[in-house]
Image 1 (spheres, rainbow, N blue to C red):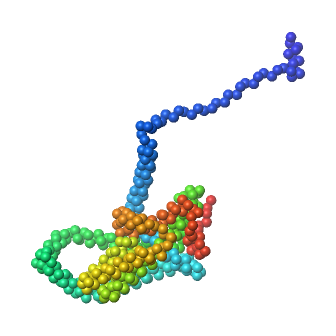
Image 2 (cartoon, rainbow, N blue to C red):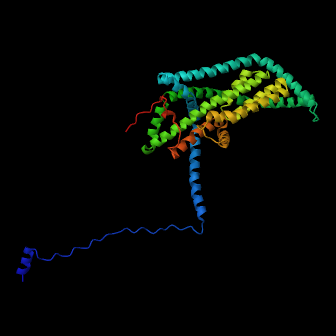
Length: 405
């Protein structure tokens, strides 16, 4: 009995025992314990709630970002103004680089030229105001007396005695507010000190942006943006820079034309302080809609005080004509499609900027919109038509920083 099993093992004829079965364990997903809100809660309300909390988080992030920028306003505001100055100087810097000038020399010469032009214009205006101020005071006094005489002819009972009483009440009120006025004057003095400190910071930053802005931006992208998004962000930022440069170039042209039109009308009507009106209109025209309106109102008031209501009406008509020519023909011709903003977006942007930051917000609203809209459009559609400033056939005055691993 033992021989046969031994031979079977030696000859390999012993049957192989059956293999053990392989057990495959498939994980069973846990049952979804979430409660289906439908039909108790409509699907539209669920979707709306999802949008609501996401928008709420975005709103909180935007408010937090604004609070941070406002807290560091002595840095952020000069840097913002420096970016606008660099965009304004970019065509001149590009031209000088095309002529073979070094980058640093092109930036400093362009910035010094801007400072000389603005300083010379303000000096000329100050000289003219100082020279014509006595005559303007005399004309203002005569115009006020004529206005008082005209008010006396109206059936409202406004005579010299009533006006003198109002003037006396106003003087007494000002005397009671002497301490408040002194505090306001001190705050204005401090504000002027902060203004000049910020101006110095803006000029220095504008030089570096004009000299090495491309390198500064490339370094910021490499530091802050994940690697897979760097190319698209850089491309979109170039589109935004194109739009910003186009806006600043068109803003300078529009401001110069507005100032020339208002000054020409004032010269023909023999309104005093023509150079001052030119400078005021030029600088205020960088604030869209609001600035030109304020400058035109000043011109009309000067015409009214010095020459009467007939010349004031003529001046008002000239200002309206200049503004209409600007909005109807000049802005579409100069801006073209580089800054594609609807007029309603411009109006709402200026209003929102003024609500948030006053005059500064109104000044920065449209440049921010121009850059932001172009940036977002390029992110959504990278193949959209357009010429990037730094990708055209012009030499790049701000070379891209070498990529690091």
